[in-house]
Length: 219
Length: 138
Image 1 (tube, rainbow over the protein chains, first blue to last red):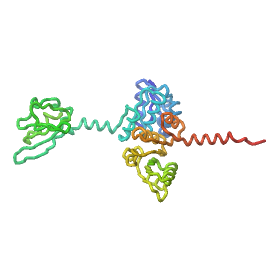
Image 2 (image 1 turned 135 degrees about the horizontal axis):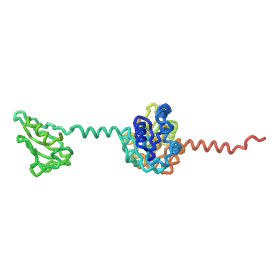
Image 3 (image 1 turned 135 degrees about the vertical axis):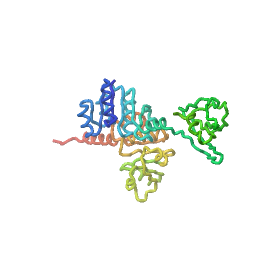
Image 4 (image 1 turned 90 degrees about the vertical axis):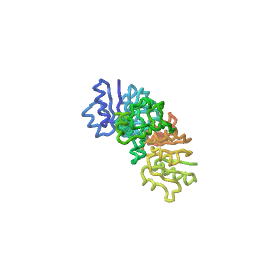
């Protein structure tokens, strides 16, 4: 494959060396002269200087025969223009763009750049996946009765997702009260099936909270 | 007419001043608050400090109801993206964009954007001036 990489920062330069090791033909375009000088020591003829949003720079880098263009500069407008021109003017079959400011994602979508990578969005997705944000929230603490009413969300990874309430091995000193789905609440009965995204209310004795969590929340 | 001007440099501020003097409802957006100095002291329109790619800023500037949008920041790529946002997302009936690079101006004009390229204009004028002279008559 012939791959054109625009932007020789950490992402662009590491992509270049990795793709070269994989046996691809790569050209890296860098607009900053000082940065270019550094890259040239490392990549020699593989790196070219110039503003890749100038059409002649792309043409001299052989964009007409590129199989893939990857725009990873620190400027979202530049990344959009490089990808749009590559696709629409030069018919490059695949383009990949880096989104620096997540608020600009809509602009990439608008011009039809479907393959985008955003560090912020990726890290957010990891946080949502890795951190148990679906904590038990205490709604009412009935201290005198030694009871509490809690609410929690059923996540996609919850062992209870997809199960009927009667199948759950809940602690004996706890009961599910209600299940709210799409804003509508229903009393939880044995035939209620739990689905990811459900908000569940339960009443329990405080000391079985951990036991309840292990039944309903991912480990 | 309701007019939105993104980028208050020499071009943007002059258009804003002329159109406001003609009685049009003009809003100007610029990243730099100092750009307001380019407008007349008795500026009758609105001035919003913010980035032209920030959707909230554009909406605050009235892009949803503007009859015409002029995009004249100092960045060609920024201008081209803002112009496409104005046309595609907000359906503005008239979007005029300043693009200094003749190559990109021609390509995006072919894509349906109304681009103005001062560089091409300068090239034409200079070329014509040279061609029109008989040269030194011996």
